[in-house]
Length: 436
Ligand code: GLY
Ligand code: MN
Ligand code: MN
Image: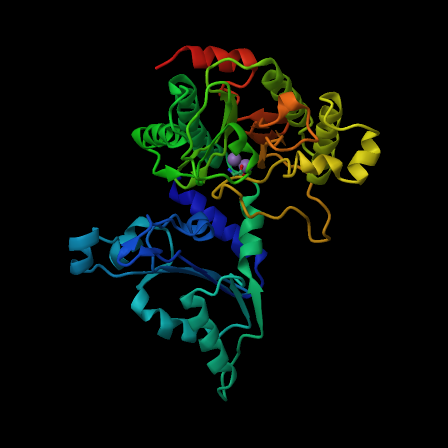
């Protein structure tokens, strides 16, 4: 993503702000155990606004009636850190690399923020994540508040994330390209999992193979913890143990995807471990697929997300009646939420810099948002029949199926960004046949 994108995003955020100061902090490093750390992952809101990928940095946006200013505080170059962990960009490097008005050593943040805050009445921060730098800023605001003779002081502290995440809702063409890159690698990984799967393997072996494809194609990370669930394990929605043996005659549900330049993909495919669907497996699979295709087909500008959720539940309920799992009137079954036992999760979520992009789902009045071009949402219906559930016809017990794609809303309808990943029964069986 080039620098003009970050400049434009900041200027949009400044337009949304009233007079005041916004403080957006980098993610902290996360300790794993003793002196080991998890791989560093930047705060998506911070990255969205400046593209800087180091920890211990702070972005400050200042808006006055006539002007605005952007300051990036970064860690200064440090020979010891460079020796052990690699060189930081440093204050000068950041000034050359980024189109911010000023860069300063993070060591000056405390003193400078106090000077900045004494000129303003509104402070914008992440209200729900008290990072150390925000705590320091609030403490500075508090001490100014009780100091005589200060010209102005902070009178309202507001949530900056709501503004940023409203911007994040609509993806630019460059963001779409980045998401497509993540999906292209994820597609390779799913296809090769279908090709290499054999009964007797362990779930983690498929996961390991997919991770190999991610890394071997330059993706830095999974977008979330992979679910590789053979047979009845698919009925545990957040199954992440991935240690069981894959058994002849079962399906395997894989919900796994990589991120590219911090942008996520989120793909689920369910396929037969031996490469051939049994009749009952195919019956349930096609029921879920039919729902997925119809829900995707309904996506267009102006359709409300809540309506899509309701529509998907109606379709899933119809599918359950057709499969003989539920009996009765659809409207009554929906009213009593009978279908939720077998289809418990929502139809999808926003996706972008986060796999579950934390963008608003409702407008300021609490009304469900209507789709606009540039939004990206997953569509992921599923039906889950536990092996021990005697309310389900015997032939379907132990089958859990989810099919998940990543859909872009366009001016003329939608684009399925993951349409290249085998999904119809013949496509999946064909892919499984070309074993590697
Ligand atoms: N992979 C998480 C989800 O599908 O929402
Ligand atoms: Mn998802
Ligand atoms: Mn998923």
